[in-house]
Image 1 (cartoon, rainbow, N blue to C red):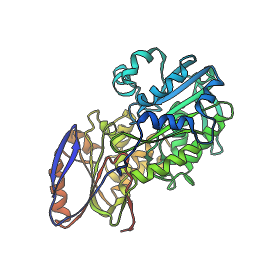
Image 2: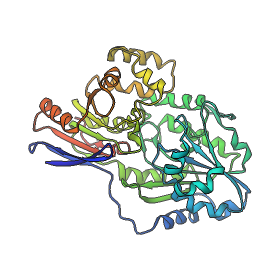
Image 3: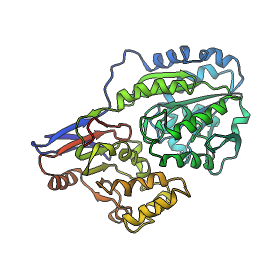
Image 4: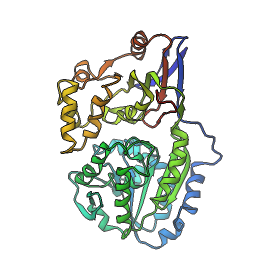
Length: 422
């Protein structure tokens, strides 16, 4: 059996044994009968638990539009084209909500985020830096998270966050409240909230009962008390096309969008995999920090003793320096895990990702097809391969030609749900 997989900008044909049981997972295809404009305008004029967009805009003179950075596949320019005509007579700025990500360059702003709108908007664009931007205090959540957001919010009457909703491995889903937290939040706010990712109930596809999500929701509810907000969130298919748009109440619309996102991105499998190929698509394949979503989303679909192969180019390397230092802080997996357990009491941002790897490797193998050097991969306890076929061949040698193989395309967004516990 031959399967085509996308990796490093090319399509690679992978040969699999004819005796193997192969399951290929990808986002569910949904046929739409409306254009992008019709879907967006429909949401603006029929919002969830809110007045329509025209009425909202008419009440205020200044607006802060909040958009995602290049680490997300949100069709920002497409949505902005529908929103900007409403703001022609208004004072507005657009802030790129990078959270703790590296700020986008001018080239990325032009080619990836704003596209052909960039020349018109370049003087209205603001960038958020979680460590350096001045912030204003909103309050504290009941779980103790300090809510500090970019100081620029004081300059505007109303807010228009633009986002997209996909499964997220510890927040349950992206979108909605994440435009503000972590989007334009202070580092200390993000770190406090993300410490809850260490809790078992902070997991993919879960909103109710997820402490991290509930903390975010409480934070945004406090913000909404004094800051009128009209949110716009899209749900995309696996090709990046808008399937539906939700607008209005930033809290309520997330639950509506999450149902559709689950339907598209959470396929069921009857049997867990002996070998799982997790194929990370752009833009999440740029470094391991982002590509790790392909591990977190799919790790529950592998049998104990199974082999997990993360396929991600990582042309920008590991990711943030502190994340790389954390991964390399233990010479052995046991040492890294011991360090992680101690950090649970003294949490620093990033350890929720780092601790997952040695914990996973206690019962399963973790390999990568990547451009990371042998030395770099070894230091972070990953077995590297530079050919998908070679990785598959070695996995077959270990697990046998009759192995159950699950291939997850676009694993940064897909969350396979195993109906069997074994």
